[in-house]
Length: 113
Length: 115
Image 1: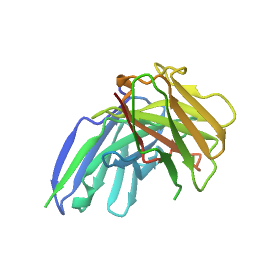
Image 2 (image 1 turned 90 degrees about the vertical axis):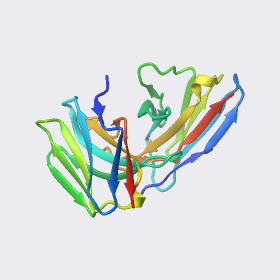
Image 3 (image 1 turned 90 degrees about the horizontal axis):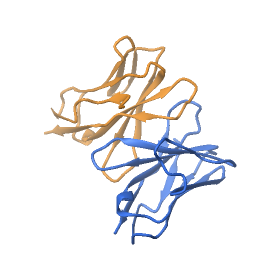
Image 4 (image 1 turned 45 degrees about the vertical axis):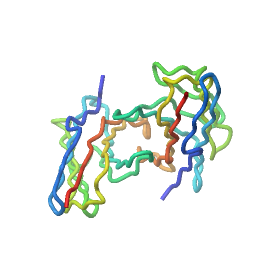
């Protein structure tokens, strides 16, 4: 049972354009959501997070949107840069078990010149 | 930011041998560390939660006798893959956090290849 889903395994975006990565979850106990970026043979690096009390969080080129009613979150990267090419994982943490993350399957983003 | 160091970054071993992976929190103390595993083109799957001074908590389907976890200090957790088999070949990643929120910091991972 995949509680966190990223239905797009890959995404290609032109440099300078907006990248939108989507994530859906099924567990209504999740109340903290994170996005991680991962390069091959490396550990994930934290990008941005959002608490369920918010619907938007922005950090530089990265913005995460949360729609609790739809159990959906998205990561917007604008403008996209070639260095953003990586696999992006969304993750979720349930109430009362902070740090025990459930990860999605990842979306490979390719930013082209 | 918090730094988590993992060693070794890759290891090749013969079937039947044991392999130890170390995970250290360099600039913070971690009473809890997490061990994840990632198979190619799949998600990171939580294997176990390592608790300083007490037994680890294993996720369903993870054999505790095969994946031995020791968390003897506030900055070090070890994962030992005992009697490794080719199907144990995977990318193992540890994580920890100085925060009470879900913001985890990850080690660089260990690629294990069992021949």
